[in-house]
Image (cartoon, rainbow, N blue to C red):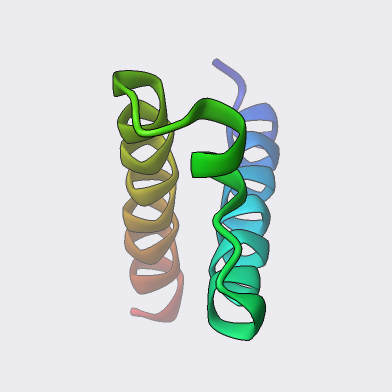
Length: 65
């Protein structure tokens, strides 16, 4: 996969995760749980967003090195 496309997908996932956590903190609304319920799908979404965050952290660590 092209690095630019992967970077865009990762950034979109990070933004979605940030918005979700912001809503959880502000008004106790978890959009992922609201949309997917407490299912395996919701857990998968959380795992994918978490993996995107780890990937971006590794990319940033490489850039800042």
